[in-house]
Length: 471
Image 1 (cartoon, rainbow, N blue to C red):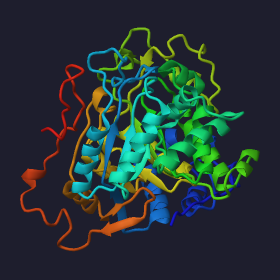
Image 2: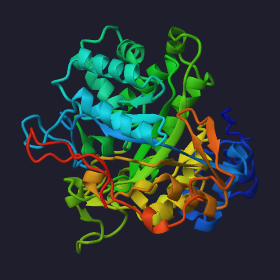
Image 3: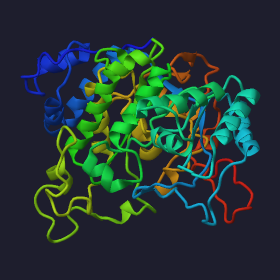
């Protein structure tokens, strides 16, 4: 069962470094303010920040078990109308390597997943104007007919925003239109909505990096509509590019505030339109921007030019409430500050302390590597995410990793925990304690070395699909 807390900001006048405040946060008895969170991020030493985040994680998830899921990322199309500067995956419809999976190709991928004990697909694509509503409904219906027990974690708020436009959704508000589309998709077989397209919510940043993508208010409203239909969702954040540190905290603040609405703590009038049982965000996952092959990646790093003095432009523009002035620094959006291991771990640890009403914090080993993902379990993460048979979007823009179930279990066990397979709602399916555990059954670890992920590659429109993992 979820350990959901909605504590008050009763200690708002204290320093974020106050031991009493942090003790209360760990116990779920106090809520950090954005100002306290920024102070913690800037001033609390990394080992201490990790210890506090780990303590909070143990309060929520206990001392023993840390989890993972066996699923597969399926990117059903790479045709997209958005022109996000950080994306190396999208294609125009007439590009030679543009693709849309046929239903049988998609079902073949799911069959491979089921064969290794997988329980879920994460299915997302570009915002493809050539696909009609019936295409999606038929696809979902085919999945559920062939694989009724597979959980379909599909699409994203930016995709839903385009669906609303493409499909002529009915309703007099974005909330109502989103419910109309989501209701049809849910009836056809969609089970939950992932948090793709979150990036950074602050308007100055989002306008620079997410051209053609919905703004943060639309993203959050669509998620709220999904919650109103009883769906569980996740939230995400992609950082380490042009944003300021305060922008990261504003992003978390938005997630926390709208989670309160879904939990009924701060219910607005739209809540009355729902069926009475709301879903909510189950997890928050943050990962650093991968720069290779993307337009944004060609932006110069801050400090690389002779005139790069003073504060990073993103910090000059950023505020804790997302309302910064993009003209406050002439180089805003023209310089990067990429994220390394320590910055990633500090950001994740802060998310565990700040997001008191979110159940799970996921480790981003896919972008950071297995060992950093393992370390993240000591910095507030309780979940190692997916075995990741396949991933295409992040892979197209930088280094990604692929590890099998025995390695994932070994990483969790060597971090001091019992590995356990979970499902989408974080119910435990199997706890690996005995000799038959995936990692303990291995006799030759050389057969389980880290691999690169499968990537959809088609040299021409009618070229055969490349399936599987490659060394």
